[in-house]
View 1 (cartoon, rainbow, N blue to C red):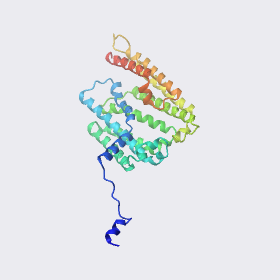
View 2 (cartoon, rainbow, N blue to C red):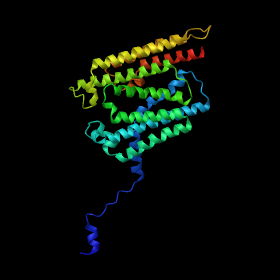
View 3 (tube, rainbow, N blue to C red):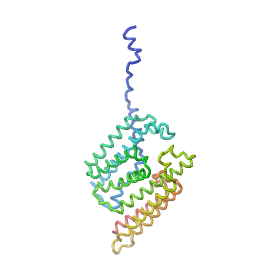
View 4 (cartoon, rainbow, N blue to C red):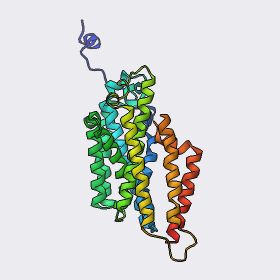
Amino acid sequence: MSERSAAVIDPSAAVPAPAATPASLLALAAGLLRTARPRQWVKNGLVLAAPMAAARLLSAAETVRLGIVLILFTACSAAVYLINDARDAEADRAHPVKCLRPVASGQVPVGAAYAAGALLAVLAPAAAAVACNADTAALLAGYVVMQLAYCVRLKHILVVDLVIVTTGFLMRAMAGGLALDITLSRWFLITSGFCALFMVAAKRYSELLLMADRDGDIGASRALLGEYTTGYLRFVWQLAAGVAVLAYCLWAMETGGRPGGLLPWRQLSMVPFTLGVLRYAVFADAGSAGAPEDVVLRDRALGVIGVAWGVLYVLAVVNR
C-alpha cells in the first residue's frame, strides 16, 4: 500500500474543527444573550432607587454615571447567569424545561459561557472603579462573589438562600447611591431590604405551592424548597411586609412638608405604598407570585397604585 493511501485511511489522523462562519458566530452571540436572561434585567432598575429616594436633581454628568452603573450591574448579573448555566449544564440536560437553555442544549459551548461570564465578572467592577468610584467597584465585586458563592454552595443552605437573594436586591438599590455619593438613609435601607425579603419569600411560597400541586415532587425543581413549609414562608413574607410598611410610615412621619403647603404629601404617600403591598400580597397568598416581574408589570391595579404613589412622592419632594 502506498504512503498516500495509508495517510488517507489512517483513523488516527486529526480531523480539523469546522471553521467558524458568520452564521455560527451569530448563533453563539444570540445564545450568550439568552443565557444572560434579558427578561431579568428589569430588576437592575433598582439602581435608580437611591437617587429617587433622596430626591436628588441630577446633573448631566451624574445622569450618565447612573446609566453606566445600570449597565455595569446588568453585566454583573449576566456574568452570574452565564457561569451558573455553564456549571449546571449536565444537570440541566436532565430537566424537562432547563434542557432548552442554550448551554444545556449545546447552542453555547460550556467553555464559551465560562469565558464570557468570567470576562464580564472582571471587567464590570474594573470599569466601575474608573467611571464611578471605589465603593461602587467594591459593591459590584462583592455582588459577583456573593452570587457565585450562592450558585456553588449557599443556595443549598436553609434560610441563607433567602438572605442572599434579598441582599442581592438591596445591593442593587444601594448601587446608585454609592455611585453618586448619596448618603443612604436608614429608612431607605430598612424599607428596601424588607420589601425585597417580602417578594423573595412570596416567590418561594408560590413555588412551593406549585410544586405541591404536582404530586409533591418538590425536589425535582429546587432541592432546598422541599425543606421549607408553607407556614414558615407565609410567616416570613407577612413579617417582611409588615416591617416594610412600618419603616416607610416612620420615614413619612419623620418630617412634615413645607410650612404653608397645600397637603402633607409625604404622609399621604403612605396610602398607595400600603395599598401596593396589600395588592401584591393578594398574589402571594394565592401562590401566583412566582415571577415577581410579571406581577409588577402585568397587574393593572398595581400599576395604577404605583403611579399614584409616584405622583404623591414627587409632590412631597417639590413641597419639601
